Length: 166
Length: 305
Image 1 (cartoon, each protein chain N blue to C red):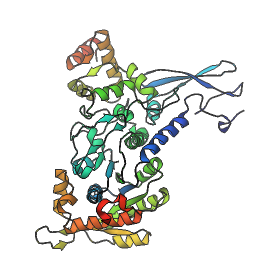
Image 2 (cartoon, chains in turn yellow, blue; image 1 turned 90 degrees about the horizontal axis):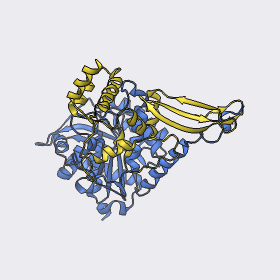
Image 3 (cartoon, chains in turn green, brown; image 1 turned 45 degrees about the vertical axis):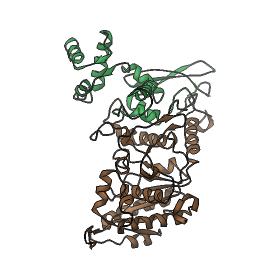
């Protein structure tokens, strides 16, 4: 995908990639001639499609910092003891934190990547209808952040439900 | 006004260059693999993975250094058949080291990443209901990493166990244009042969190297006690299918119940019963494959000694 500044007939350059909000990205381009700016806004599905390519927007390099980074960061459920190095789950968490593309790291940041969900809490989350799950997850994580919880347990979910009225 | 082709680059992300970089890394890794062979079928349930595992054992027993890439991400079985299930993977500067099975067979499989038997492969995404849009793309990216980020080392033979479906070979051809050949597996039923014909056609059109040949698995039931043969399926004409499509017929492998027992126990049947009729059939297919590939004596260890 390329962008052209029609008045200047000049290709536009990527200026910045803004942190995603609920899976939607903002990618800003500008014209070096007239300084006009436009923003490409992606929906979560488009974001996910680009993520699937394992490419980075704005960095110009896909060189992995650790092997199987994309695989590790893309699996929603994986074995903690897959790798021998480091503490159990360390490699997985590192990959998750680093992200597999321009989006993963930013999505993680915007979607509560600093929170740890217990298995029971995760199961509760899975029982929420899929169309409402991203919203519910974000609401619970926002509640957890406001109240200083890093680990989201079933108790935290119950508190959030009571407070938010979910 | 400028058109798409008039503009060089994409404004800063250099997506094309990133993809080129990815493929370059894969090429460097695969440069140490002498021979790469895809094992495929059209229809599921024809015993393709069992053939893959036992062919790997047959080559390894001849002294070859063999690896298996389990490309069936959603239904991985190779790790169990080779007995590496639950093994932990070592990471070094070279990459992620594959799980090491009997006879030094190296394995990379999605199964090694899954926590429990019943855990399906679920990709991290804001929503799963539209996953049909991006799933295939993501799976190809994972397979690329399995090829490029795994420290396969020097291999005489890398067998790639593809999932059922004629389209899968196209994905693999995109990742590995220099694939050396493909082995197609069918069973005697006409239904299976109907579907495998499509895979043969895709393999011929997509891969640079012609198919190595067709294997008829479960060709007959072989009683392990008395050795009597009986029909498992209404006999189809696998050899005729191969001939009509212009590819070699590599051989028939009868069904022996001990194959499934060995697979469940994580020990390739070939290691335990290599001198049985089934073992000899597999060895014959391995030999025919080696001949078709023109594998050198040094690639085959004891095969020439």
